Length: 377
Length: 105
Image (cartoon, rainbow over all chains, first blue to last red; front, side, top):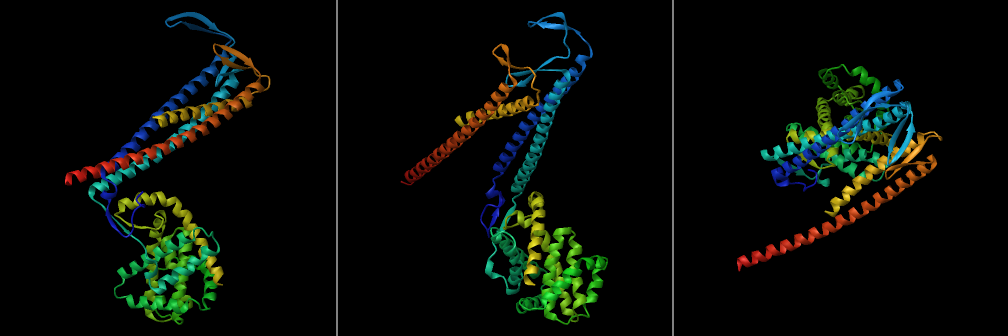
């Protein structure tokens, strides 16, 4: 609901959703819940009746005849006897009756009970959905009352610096090749937004690191077409899993010190990092271990490259970038590409909603990346 | 109002459809020699199982067709409602602007 609106603007939530409106919506959903609840109660009553009937039908044929009081008119009873206790005339519905024995009747009743049970299930699920909706509306109402402000920013495609956009481009290749043509645009947009986010992150966190940042982006320009990525990629792909396990227990400190004395192919490094970073994203999607994965890229580098302390800071930064960008990447998908900055309250419900879909799309994104690798090779 | 009525009818028919489907299922489960009766007015009339089966099948068909028809009419009515709403809105806006003009003059 919040996704529909203008971009690049700051709107107070109250102007989008007046308090009364939100409360009204919540009220309506609650009414619907009450309605469903009464239905549920009725169906439960049916089930209880049904069970009683099953018991009765079970019991009746135990004796040849039962002495009963037969109702006669409204207020009169007279004594009588039930005979033929194993013969039932069962109403199937729509005016159709069938002669059945007690056993057969019980079968019919049990089938009915099953259909009632399924009705109860569906009603309960329905109520759950509605309750989630109601809580969302209530949260919105309270937020509106607090005067929350919604910030939307549109991503401007061309304004990013070269390196970033290039790092985005190759990854975008994957879906173009492998996946459907239809969602290309969306995917590209998502990536673009992700890059933007990463950039912001960088700018915010590294005032003094900015020169290294430039360096790394410059490297991308020079590197993106060069050949030696290939063997690195292959190596990394083959060894990634085993190494991952082996290096898991290393601490961050160790990694840094290991990196310091190294460096030879300065240029290759950064591209490697980028590739590894993307690999890291991929494997995160598979295994869901954020921290471990994001360390990965930097762990690989020591094995292949040497020297230069500057490099290590860059690698660390890429780590950080990806660590932070991963979660937001997930949540972004739910919003179909618009950036919404809120306090946590409002993001949480939507994130919950998206959790299912984000898993699916997460595994989706893993595919394109690997395809990309094959393509480059 | 018409829409609400239509919705009610629709609900009724859906319930009937469910009931009929249940009946059909039960009839399918019956053995050939079972006695089937149909309640017609105050009396139970004995019926062939095959006949009853065919009848119920036909009824389900009819109800589904009816449901479709109702859906179409509901849609139609809603469209009409929306167009009326729009005209009303336009009229109100005109009235407002006219009044504003008067107030100035």
